Amino acid sequence: MITRFDWDAGNHEKCQKHGVSIAEIEAAFAATPRIAPAIDPAAAEQRFIAIGYGADNRPLFIVFTLRRSGDHQTIRPISARYMHAKEIARYEQTNP
Image (cartoon, rainbow, N blue to C red; front, side, top):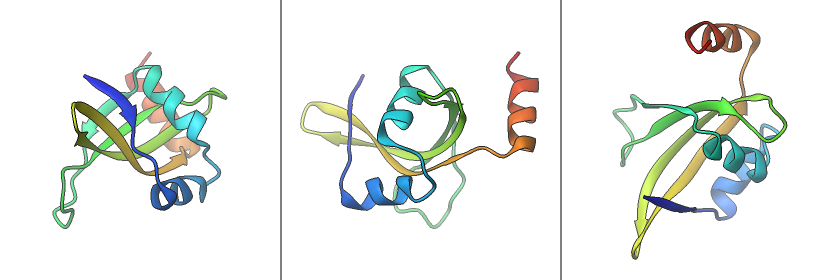
């Protein structure tokens, strides 16, 4: 069970680079986003993508990894951005 998020200066800054706030990212996970494995053979750890809606109801694309911290499983967002119009249309077609 995931009980917390893993934030530090590195991932906080990278996610906000695209104007996405921490609150929006955490709200997207609370709203049960669509999750799939990310294909990145160069990544040192397994990454996933989450597609869902943030706190302001704008569609988000989030890259994240899962980490263990003591007894807790954490979500570590790596990058987040707002989805483009074509991505939104495709997402809404597959998620009526």
